[in-house]
Length: 99
Image 1: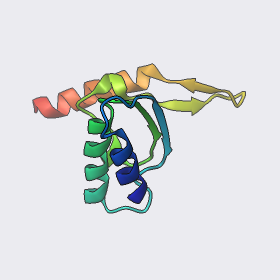
Image 2: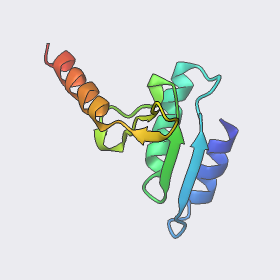
Image 3: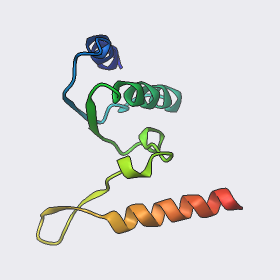
Image 4: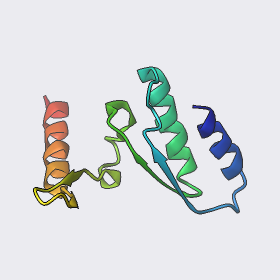
């Protein structure tokens, strides 16, 4: 989590912009810490584009569906985005909140 604070300090200057790539920012962290990281990443995204990979549900911003991209390997081993599954998850989330 220390690296998040370093990035935060760097981007605190509003004139700084760019792209930040992070692999598994919530790895080995308690779910509460993962939620804190998501909040920090959302704030940092005002000044820079943040792209991160995760398997952690607490680092998925379900309030911002257009920011979610599910990636898979197809049978040939090529990476592809599965927009249909994102829409399925979005509809499922909507249905669960409607109950």
